[in-house]
Length: 262
Image (cartoon, rainbow, N blue to C red; front, side, top):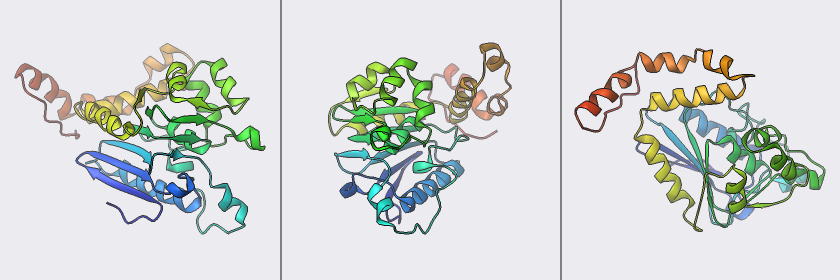
């Protein structure tokens, strides 16, 4: 467990769990909480023993209701700047190729939804609600939500959410395409851990290389250019012990022992 004030972190083998721990404020994030989130994900990124992360919110009401507007309106001066990694330490973190799963247990509004969109997989409780409601209060979704949502779902569906700020259920989120799976209330974290377990069965080097290629390819104009790109992660994978261990374990009918190293 961690000694943070506004979040909690937990390590379970190769799994790293980050919990936004402000349930009385619907897990809204102020500058100090953002700084803690960024620090936690910096540590996850740097630790070769940690292969998958889950981000979630404390309690059952909210994953995160976004920016702490009460703090912003209070006139208090923030002792820390917005981290370079962005809102929640994730929204502007473009070089993290380890997988991140969002376990959404309630409201994911504004910046909270943007944190979830920055994850690779979203597991939502059936009671979860999603929205980018900023236009309804004269704001805009500036933590990359306006860019990520249209890249993850059909454009007309994305614009239907972006231009109205309307709230979408977990079931509709799955239908639209930004939710990976929906589970009963109270089961989002449990299911996220199950998905993490499936990822952990794979070579971490292969997983990172796969995410790197997929994410990089999305930013490429055409399929051929994306296919021809020589991703550094692929080169590391092909030269790694994991690349040799996979076929060897298969031939010997045993589970592979991944090394996560060249």
